[in-house]
Length: 270
Image 1 (cartoon, helix red, strand yellow):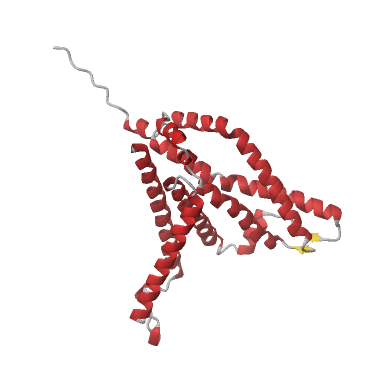
Image 2: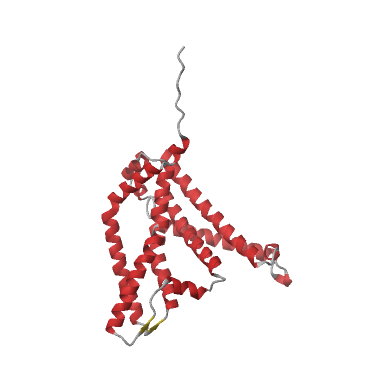
């Protein structure tokens, strides 16, 4: 009796295949390269004009003054961009095409994660850097008597201080990723107007949580007569408090990504 041959499927290959993922990246690049180029050009022009007006309004511009402008311009683009993750879900026909893509769910999810959350922080700072230097040169060309300290990442990091830099940098990166990830999850859940719907739900949830804890604190009289919650006094070591904050942020980030993944999986199955 002839032996029956059985081919065991490579489970890892079915979950994530680097060659298949590379083809997916290449396909998405060819589909969106024109719109991406126009978007980057528009961003560069917009950043340059805003920076020009900001510099013209101040005759003495220090390096540290670039920080709020950098945060507003980069965050103002990165956050809404994350909210429109999984653009195929905005249209039933495109949703069907997304489901039929010959890739695993993890590959599709990873692509959106890279494009919508990680890539803005690789591209936007570079666009801001070039546009800020161009705007500075233009302002100094028209008005040489002004003092403008050029935008520099190293100068800004030096302002924070070498001792606090690792913690503040980690904290800032995690906060930015969490904010993006919440909107990213909204893009996976809502088909239409994901940004507005996510912000409304987030605002309502935040209000309920604040009211809840305020009510508990008032009812238990936690801060009256010198009483302090045990959570605040459990350890007075600064390193422990920092580790706790970072740990909570990482947990929230992973939980948000997991929630978004399973919502996409639901759409894939449905």
